[in-house]
Length: 204
Image (cartoon, rainbow, N blue to C red; front, side):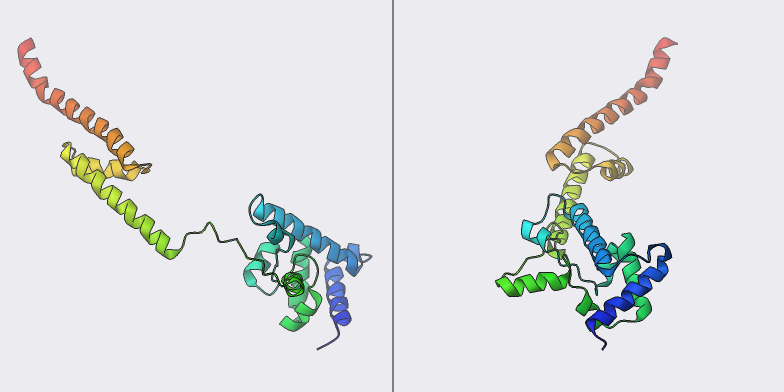
């Protein structure tokens, strides 16, 4: 393993080779550009969500494939990742360099220094598998109850299925009330159509 200074010099040289017009840019300037991109990413990702501590120490893991894909939309990060891939750096070599604000190493250093564990709230709004199964089960029960009510109003099976496909299930009561009115309208229409021949005879 080469020294940390040699590693960042190698990365710097490779990045400037890909940006020949910017060969006067120093390593510290590159780091500042990377940090600025991380700050923009934090704002665009968290918005008003997440804890203040989590935003202050977001902990981007530069060894994580998903994190790299996410950060590659930023110009300097894209160039940085291309450089370390080209150089074939090991995980330990990358970690020895990636210590600036917003990185996982910086977060771990803070946690070790303060004895605080920063909880990642990214997935808090994502339901668990059990919750998804419960939601699907409740939806199926609503659908079956609504189907039974519509069939009881005299609607045909095909008509019922069409109604169910268009129902957003805000609540079972609202769905039943709305579709019951539709069923009554359809039934009235059918009665009128059945009486049309009689009206024709009467006119004659």
